[in-house]
Length: 81
Image 1 (tube, rainbow, N blue to C red):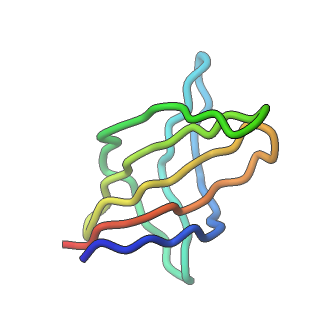
Image 2: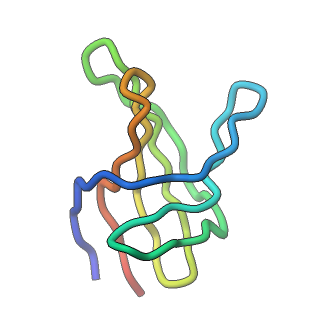
């Protein structure tokens, strides 16, 4: 099932040598462990940059974004198996 979300989430991520590695995120009262990141790219939004990740978890794939100006994480969409 594919669904758009655009919801604020909390993310545990590693910032290492100029790269971002999401490890876990919390959404809707549940914590999801990221098993693998399939895609990452950048999208400009005015003067800010959104770092986009397709994060695979045990039950689905979640498109999450990190905004470099607000330092906020957002769940953009998800696909549940």
